[in-house]
Image 1 (tube, rainbow, N blue to C red):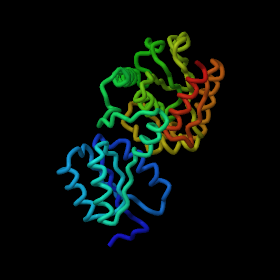
Image 2: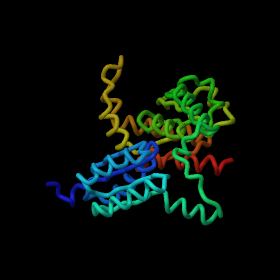
Image 3: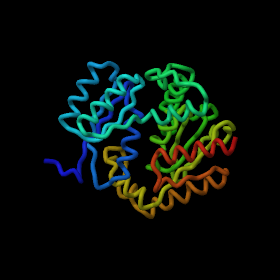
Length: 273
């Protein structure tokens, strides 16, 4: 039998993709390090038959139930059945909807998947993602003046994942590596449109990440030089000097998640507009 202090079942029921629930559930679970959630995700639950099957599964493995279901009859069914099972249930969106309705003075549309409408914002995100993938790791440098953001930094400073995260929020992001002794492309220095940001980290952090990165198959690659702390210090010093010379802001990503780094970049864009 599972030790309740170490494991618990986390059931997440959604009438859409479940992304909102997964984010909320994991954000809260992270605050309880002594208990590990066993996640059960049930997306696209939109009718009574589907929901009853889910509730039967929960009855066999009771735990915490989070749900985002717009249909009020189905939502009520979740609450009633969970009370019968003896397991807590939380409608994650309802308190937020109630607050919005109270402030705005009119009810919500209660339409399933409204946040995923194929509107202009959606297509802007797709455009940003395509741009970012095409301009990863220094590709197509002639296009830098079409970017919203350009990230520069030495190898293993999270340029690519940060770029993709920003692109998912509609920010066209290019990135290019800074290599010790190499100059930057003129198209970057001449660009006037994008916010250019340098990403750095501690020597120890970069060395650690590089040690776990297998690049041994690359022609002429020297793994010892790549992970050597003295060499990394020189690379970082060079990167910082380039950013200082051109007046580009620098963000230390050592203790930041990708989300936190992206948030800092978005804040810089707002500040510098």
